[in-house]
Length: 121
Image (cartoon, rainbow, N blue to C red; front, side):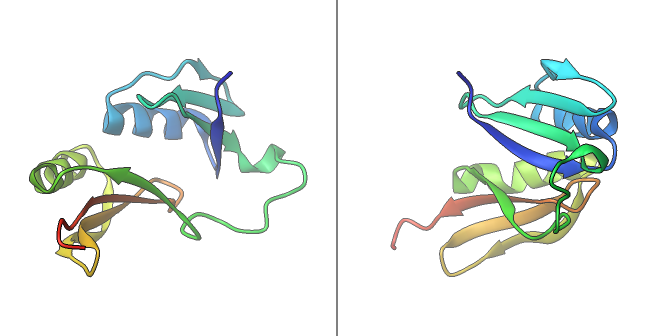
């Protein structure tokens, strides 16, 4: 059994391509209305056409975040890699009160926060 996080998207096929390129994993399912990628943790990332969701979604992208925990050493390299793969950057690598972080946006405006927790917390 795979637990799945669902994102409502305009174009599941395009979103699957975006996430496949960004994360370096291929979708296990792709159709015009739904795509599924399985993350290394085993969590499924479902990309569901927002036009077919019942009940209809009341919020769009940007209202929450998917977090990707990394080490400090990985933050800047991941940022550069994601930019090169076409991710829009909402926040460049920045030192915040909890640690170092950057925020990228997917094609639908969903926020992807890459972060490293400061050791002195």
